[in-house]
Image (cartoon, rainbow, N blue to C red; front, side, top):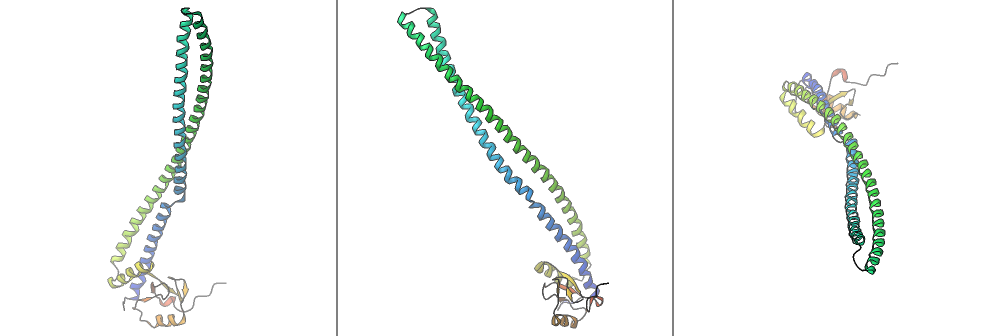
Length: 253
């Protein structure tokens, strides 16, 4: 059975305090790293980028459609220009010139229809470009929010890391002055139970928060003062003191 002087065992409470602080810092770090705002923004950014991609594809397709429409109008306009030149020259048979006039009427109608299509495509393209710009702004806004929150979290994480470094240094310095055998028991208990040591305060284990049974209390009270005893519920080392023994003090009033 491991042993250590009562005064030495009392030092475990200070060591446990440092370990509890390190655990709290670790929990804060994990909480910051899993901040729901980051998760929500990542999901929103994924959706927004998907919609932006679709908007870009729609603009690209409309631009290709506009180029084809412009080419169709240009082709008909070139033919009209040639036919008008032939008609104005007055060369050729009368029936051919009449046929050419009919063709020009048809071509002008065709050009008018194609220009209407071109105008419709251009208007649709303007609308699609506006939609793309609006979607790009949404993506930029989300990325801006993401960057601000990420910077805020990184600053807090850096503060936690710096504080943890200080506390670990304090712990290492304090632990170096403890009884080696007792420290080994404490470290093993801490690793296994999550809590290395706690007070036995007026019959209650502060490691488990439970009041010990009469049998457990009798067994612990019968142990030598320098004997290291453990909480039957939490498994941590119970640090005893004569002034903490007996029933809990009644509340004032």
